[in-house]
Image (tube, rainbow, N blue to C red):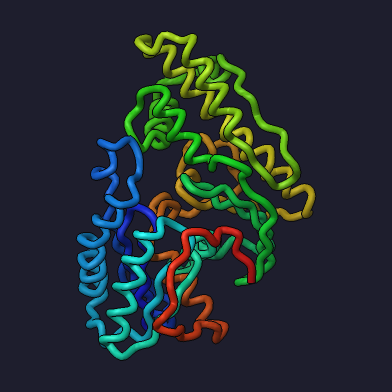
Length: 336
């Protein structure tokens, strides 16, 4: 079976094709719209939707071209319809449904967070071993910080998540306080990695929120950084670097402490991290025995959606949906 997958949940137009018979990814295309958001200092939902109208047809055309397939040669179409920016999701859903309908092929919807959750299995498409089940898995990105107990393929339980800001959102908001351009997370990671010292990372002891098991909170950290910024000289780059390094350390410590505690509670050996923040080099340094997808599959992509669809097909659970299916902005607390 050949499946074309689409994701347009935020500000990337993504398309990929997978061959479930060969267990091979035939194409993997991402058209990022970050540059269109920089002048606004963040994602503007209306602008994202308009960018998808332009970018998604190109991404799908490119994915089919790389896979050397015509739309009618695709056996099943899939698209994420939750959670995300509702306008952006509707662009992807409408385009995918139209393409499936005109090709006379079935289509299905999938959960964007569930696709992130199983993205470590993309390594199996290259003949590598998957992280051994069960997992404690964390989907950590700009919009989500969620912990799951993943027992096996497509069997998992949501354990908890952020009570306010997501970790990636905290990076971007703190970056804005420090006058760093959007997206701030990757910039802080690179700057701290290349220029900061251990003393910089510990100069400001920002809070690590104490929450119930499996839950996070980053709003207090954001407030603490804001208060410190008001007392600091932002014209002094050394001081800004120390603020960035200390804030990053606080965000990552909160993740690491909670995840290791979740492992201990459940007695699970395998720890998996996915989502955009999983690209952070300092986080990978702090959790060297954990499993991370390659960076391009941590951020939004359709390869993970195609892989998830292939897993459902493998269990005969990829069901054709009604053409009236719609999109939902929420739905991060996925259950099965």
